[in-house]
Amino acid sequence: MSPIPVSWETNQPTPLNEEQQQRQNLDAIHQHIMNTLNAFYVDTLITTATTAELTYYYFSQTTIPVFRHIPKEDLGTLGGWLSGHSAIRSYFDLFTLYWTRRIRVRQPTVTVDPVNRTCRFILDVDWEWYKPGLPGWSEVLECFHAYDWEYKVARGEYVTLSGRDTCWPFMRRRIPSEGKVRDMYDTVEPC
Image (tube, rainbow, N blue to C red; front, side, top):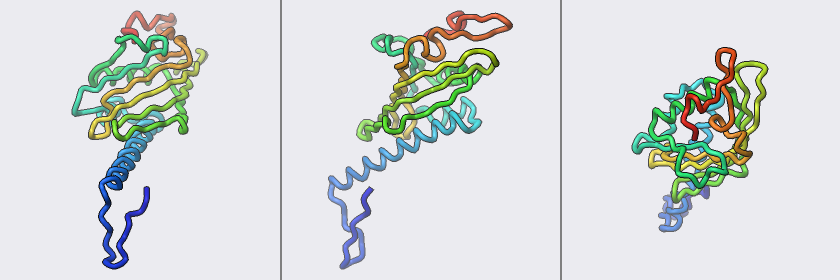
């Protein structure tokens, strides 16, 4: 961001023209979205934020937030959307209950559209089961967030680029339960 121009005669800031003001506003929106995105992933990975805290602090309180996580092959379908805080909280509860994860945001891939308050980015996620001895896997995601006026996610879409069999957790993954393995389709609506 460029410094505010100062008039040497009066030592007062010179008023910005409309174009400079708009650019300054867009730069501020861009920076705010990047800060929000970084804080979301710090809280998801490092802190012990509960899923209720995640949904309250990062998902819209002014509109009903919607979210989906699907494989690229299913991108054209209309299904799989989770709607509302309870559904999104359940999504985060599921993956914190059964898996640990290491998420890496590919920084050069983060693109922010400050006019529409959206961002796109790529994540590499390594999943490991909490129960030892079960194989982990890696997932590559292209993510989209649309933010409301409070910089909270109003719409989120995570698309698995690495193949249907790596789409967490609903696609082709199994949950160990009481000595047997049951398919998640038995208990959870697929995305």
